[in-house]
Length: 254
Ligand code: IPE
Ligand code: IPE
Ligand code: MG
Image 1 (cartoon, helix red, strand yellow):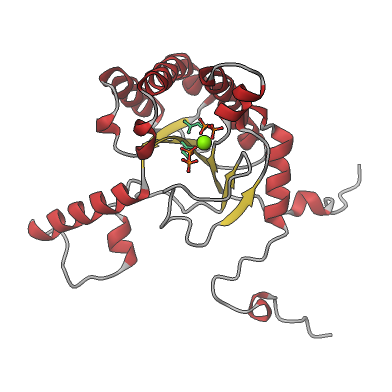
Image 2 (cartoon, rainbow, N blue to C red; image 1 turned 180 degrees about the vertical axis):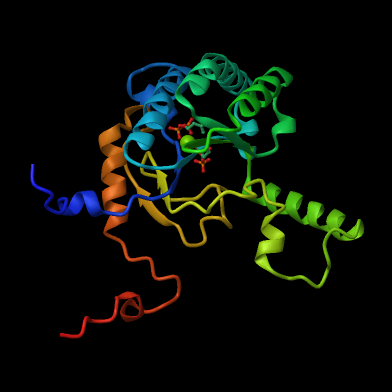
């Protein structure tokens, strides 16, 4: 084969960090006359598929909104079933992550999760912490408003102990105290199931993210759907406050 330049699709920029609001498990189950938990069970299968699909497509970091701070308000049996599924998932994935070199990280108030889940998370995070190529971030008991409150609290404590100065009003100094400290901001945020809201997810970090909303329900979300969201992202122009003209490389002189 000749060394011709690759087709345009291959040159398309791939988002470094993709974050997904996985929504629609309940509706998927309802459409089939199944209990909601069956939708969640299928949703876990999609988590597995998408974790590897994203890596295959060149994504380096994938954040999945798995359980919001507000999801505790669901019926007790659904919350219990979700925690059970999470524990089962972590138990199964631990070895797989080590084998496939997937780094696991979490964001959210992890201390509010059941003790068994916390132990599994801590073990998996520890065992995978040196993998540098691909990171899966699970947002668990996560809410942006809690995150801001927790960050302000940690910042105040840093000031009180002399580790931070109150006059340093830079974003860089503040963001160090967010759950996402050290993580790049999401480039692309996807929400499935047709809802077009952010539901308290990465409010600060998504300041300049591109959004893709798809009607596909999470259990049906496939590698092709992810690929099409990435293709959509590649067509966008991220201007960060500048004009389109400023972003174009200066015309080459003849
Ligand atoms: C997303 O699916 C899973 C979680 C929020 C845990 P939902 O359970 O919200 O599904 P719908 O929105 O009721 O269809
Ligand atoms: C957002 O989905 C939370 C997760 C995907 C974990 P929800 O289904 O809880 O969001 P709302 O309540 O419809 O906004
Ligand atoms: Mg929902």
